[in-house]
Length: 119
Image (tube, rainbow, N blue to C red):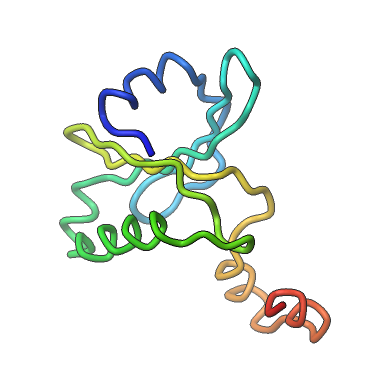
């Protein structure tokens, strides 16, 4: 897990490639390690939007849960940081999107896909 001083080093180590997703509270950007080429998802959440929508407790719970969950079907959490405007979450880069977004669009999973998700 990284903290603010390490996150400053992160900006020197990673270059932002592009935006992956734009959501209600911020953006997810892809960062690429300049030396190794490894990629990471950096979720930048706007503090002003979090406070305006009274989501502070939800964000803190998200960080706590991500920090303790270790499961092959859960995204890996690399750490967090903040500056005056944003909270940054470092996450494993997984292409394909969120299951929640998929279900909002498609309503249901076919049986074979449901079995895969439950195993």
